[in-house]
Image (cartoon, rainbow, N blue to C red; front, side):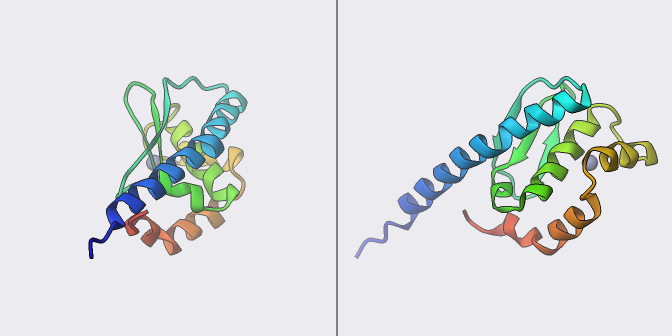
Length: 123
Ligand SMILES: [Zn+2]
């Protein structure tokens, strides 16, 4: 019997990407507005290594797997990446900016530490 797992996995991945776009991209826009920060493009990406990243050109990438996280965690990752457009390094200033825009920062960080294995799952 032929296992059709790969096609099922692709469909599941597509659904996650669609959901991630729907839930996460409008939040990036909203946070950017409240920050008063400009970004190039926000994209949902597939990464095994990071929840979010930003590029030198000011584009923001968010891991599609983040759609499984609670809202305060999603907000923290978005705020973290947008804050890098103001302060590239993890300095005290950076942490101050993030904390001001994502009050759930500490809880979100421990959630991400605990659920880091989500990055490894094949969805
Ligand atoms: Zn960072």
